Length: 252
Image (cartoon, rainbow, N blue to C red; front, top):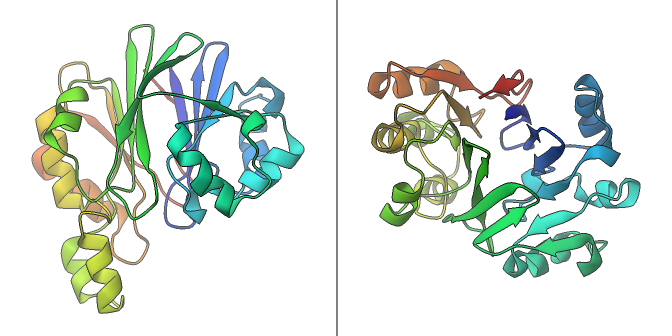
């Protein structure tokens, strides 16, 4: 299992997951041009992509979807309940470009579990992917994680998880009050401190990497996110994915 976060943040999100002959993308919040460049750097063409997973319909997660639909034959693997909200934003999307997946499903040899998230979108999910003996958890854009979710994501090989904001920076920062309240609400985003506490509960001996994702450029810094997580977790490889350069290729 190889993973590369191309970009992560409020301006655009996109991650590539390579599982031998199966190649998946999570979110297409970047331009199609940026995506193809990232694929070229990995010696991959868009024709080799097995499918695209989407977390929800906000622009920073689907900004490049319209062009991708026009310039490639890539299929979307999404829950059916997400379709209408995506089509509202991207009218070019049609059902024949989608393969609808259930809470527990498979994409070829990959086991896929939807992680239901709490965000101010009509329908939003994260993903747990298992290929052979390796498991990836991908969670961004959620105000909290309930006990059922936490119990289902214990001791996985790699976590890509939101560490959106530092609470003090947010509350002392320039956002208007209504936006601050939105970010810290149950339908907003995870703070560094909350993410650290969740990770402390779920990581285990199998965990090789933690990737901190979707950092706010206004209400957080990579150093602050990293130091907060390290206050709780000191024995794991922790990587911060940025808006400007994402991550290098990670293998588990």
